[in-house]
Length: 355
Image (cartoon, rainbow, N blue to C red; front, side, top):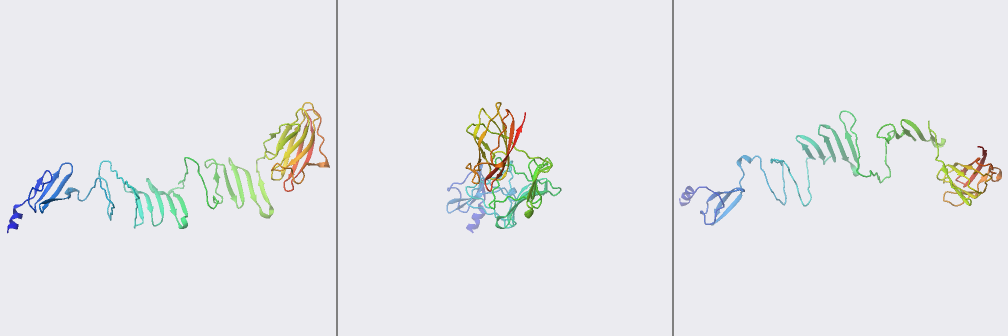
């Protein structure tokens, strides 16, 4: 009966601060309204007050909120995390890793009700949708052994272009040492206009400039290989040799066409340096204003700047060096066939172009 009378007589009180241990009796329950912090439930037991967690507003039970939450771990099942403050910001700031494990297979990022980022952890691909039309998207898919496909989809037309625009170099470094372009696809050099390199058919490569095929390379097997210049011509930059009475150097590794004008005297050694490949080469010789200038030795030099192993001197038609035109300002043209395999230079002179 005494206990019942105690329960009947006691009532919950509302305090504006936490109770002291001298306040109330065992079994009393009070609420403490702490300014700026909230409302707390307090219970007295064994002459001491115990405080429960801060009480939530009944109107907010369907939308629980947390501020300044610090946890060692957090597990949320079948729930949503939302924000209701003025900015709506939600920040995750951790000292370690953030792991997202979706047994359903997808981790998505939405703009309102529209999914923009879809991480498919089962299919192993990332899809980024156009917020104006989710049927237009960019996709990265990873398959067996890390084989990766980057693709774009335009649901309506075919203008889902893929642009790589680094603020630096664009480096393609394949372990297989292959950068593959599908047959008949062009490598455009003018932003997709009319200048490109492409394989028009099997073993045939075309260089197209301004819509015109300037160069065509064809591998014909037993029928040999072919280079066609189409409707274009082939030319060489004419180089000019510096006259030196002792040794004048003409380096056909730099161009097939050279020009040399005599100075005030003859030339003892004319050295002709040839490349690693066979070919036809020409040298224009012009007498000075006096004329009667001569060349004593025509030396054949191979690509490494040593004397040609086959013949160290040019072999001219008839077995002797040509007799150059002696008239002042007249021109002779020396033509050479360089046999790179045998390292022999064959020469012929076309003489006395008069002025």
